[in-house]
Image (cartoon, rainbow over all chains, first blue to last red; front, side, top):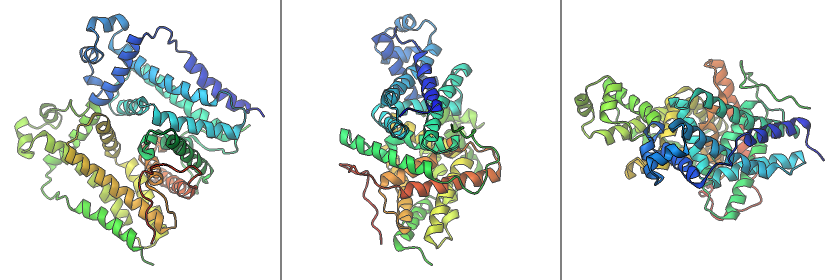
Length: 232
Length: 232
């Protein structure tokens, strides 16, 4: 069995976007700064994180931050968010990369997203920062477009996977499912066990399929969030 | 037809909690300060909002803020979050207050939550601030307990309503449904029309019922998030 072309294409776009970032020069020192930024900004707010506080928390000299990131603060903001969504993205990709059967693909995708959301603590911080930006508008326009593009690639992958198993759903429905998964650390209340994570991922998979198969309803929206995926 | 006792009790606890706050002395000036705090804190972060910035944004003198809130900043933080969840809670209560048929109750509850989440802009800011507190721990312990108690009353109402129409689900499942509803402004992409809000609320209702009826799964969790509601 092979995957339908539209699904392969969605997965390739997802992968190509991740591969377009070069992390080969990410030293341990740079990585620590990116991780400290994510944590500090999600606690104190974007604006409160200065180069000085960042240096202090990362236990490096302020001058050495500029050595690591010559373009300063805005470079750190972008690279921190990019580094964290890349990590998350690769963990999803690893789970779906070898799968050639559409039914298994959906379950593996949902399960991987639920697991990564719950077991990578930075996932929730990333979501929080993106939501804070929606309210406060901190990110540079171009980088916000990159985030939107990335979220669009994620929705596109879910939508193509749903279509490949017979569910022609709009972006609204796909985003409902993704919102449920994003909140995994809230409803999941993971106790830290591997077995408990399996059970949470199973819950996510079962419920995601119920959400897919729910009918579209009687009321037509005047403008739908996005086009319905074309089925092959 | 009347509602089962457990559901009436859950609704009464919800109502009694809301009624326990006295808003009779909430003047227009005080209200403006509470609303400005919510907006500023969700943009700048809790710590960044000083009495000075708050006074400036609310266009009042700093001294007059202390006149309105003699206990200062911590009183404003609590009252702002309390005022906003009360508004939200009363809008839900209004939608379910007269309903005496269990099947209609669930649909009215879900629909009201979806509508309030999407059409009251402060709802998303409130959620954002509560999530920021989970990461940064800004709230006073006692007030965080009040927030947790309030969220527990909300989950309890959903759980009792589900039980009254034959779905014996655990808190994990209830919180999955509530997470989907909380993200309404994300997946809903409301265009501002009343008709579009109806369509979004219908989507939420249909999908919530699919989420209720999805089976519990094969894997048992070692510790479940909460007890399953006892059915009458």
